[in-house]
Image (cartoon, rainbow, N blue to C red; front, side, top):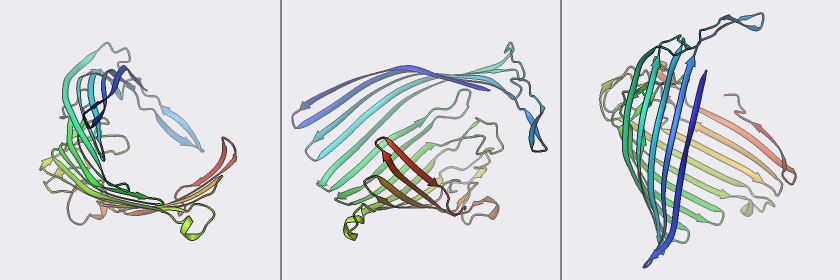
Length: 347
C-alpha cells in the first residue's frame, strides 16, 4: 500500500554560435522537482488450502510501515558542445540543491494522528563533467571523458551522499561491415551507498541505506562486430558480435557494517555481486522481412558477501551460461509476428 508522486517543471534554452574556428552548441536549463513516497503498509498472511490461497490474518493498515518521504529539488545546468575540425569537446556542470524530509507515524495509526519523528536534511552539490572525441582517421575515433557521479541519500537516512569520479578512454573503429571498440574505465568512489531492498535482503529494514566508504572499480570492455553475409556470399545479412567485460572492484577502507552483503570489511576486499568476467556472443540472420537471433551470455562466478581470495561455497554465486533465441517476421507493413525463447537450455 504505497503511493508515489513526482512532478515538476523544466526549462531549456539553446543557442548555436561561432567563436573563431570553434562552433558551439550551448544549453542552459533549470528544473524544479518534487517527489513524495507515502507508505501505509501491512502484512497480510495467507495459507494454501487444497490448492487455494486463503487469507488467514489481515494486517492493520500501517502496522508494517507508516511514513511519508518528501524531496524538493532545484537543479541548474550549463553545457557546451564545442567542435573544431576533427575535435569535439563537451563541457558541462550541474548544480543541485535538495531538501529531504521524512515523517514517521506510529505503526498501526491509519489516521496518522501520532507523529513519532520528523527527519530533515539538505544536500547541495556541483556535478561537472567533460567528454572529448578526436577523429584520428575517418574510421578511427579516440574517445575519453571524466564525469562526477552523485546519488543523494533518501529522506531520513543518516548516510552520506554517494559520490564518485568516473573516467573512461578508448578507441572506436568502424569501416564497412566491421566495428571494433576498446574502452578502459575507472570509477573512484569517495563513498559507496548500499540500499536494502526486498530482493537483495541483507538482514535489514527495506529502504535502509549504508555507507561503504571509498571504493575503486576498474575494468576494460572490448567489443567487435562483423557482418559475415557478404564474405560468405549470402543473399542476406549475417551479423555477429562479441563483447567482453573485465571488472575489478575493491573497498578502500575497513569498517563493520550491519548490511549483510558487506559485513566486516577489510580494505582490499572485493565487492559482492560483481562478476570479474562477462562475455556475450550474438549471432543473427537478417532478411528483408525476417530476423533470427541467438545470444549466448556468460557471467563469471561472484561472491555474495565482501571478501578476498577463494570464495567459500556458502558465499559463492556460481558462474552460468545462458542461451536465448528469437525470431521475427513482417506479415504486413506495421505488423510483425515474433517468437522468443529465453534460457533455452533451462539453466
